[in-house]
Length: 92
Image 1 (cartoon, rainbow, N blue to C red):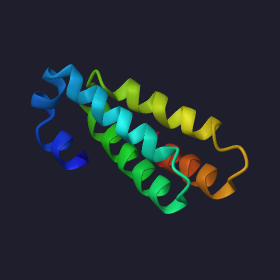
Image 2: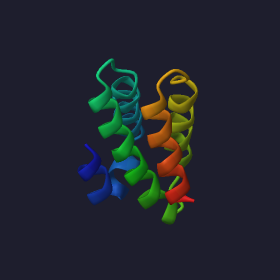
Image 3: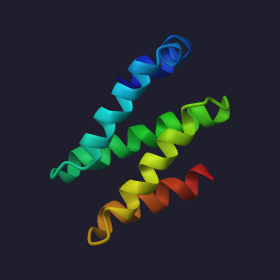
């Protein structure tokens, strides 16, 4: 999904349902019990955020919001929190 979004950004952004579906699926994966899945999806979200943020894409704030909520929803998981902090530091 990430590769499709980054490769065909204009097409994906032109279809609001597609953007909503991709972000919904990413949110579900970020809340999964499997830490490896969560870390992988978060890494991909940061990758998308970086690309779309540089292009000032309208979907970048939604991805940013998803990552911030993931940080707030992981108060007892230091590995997840550290990964999010590290990615935000390198992003900014």
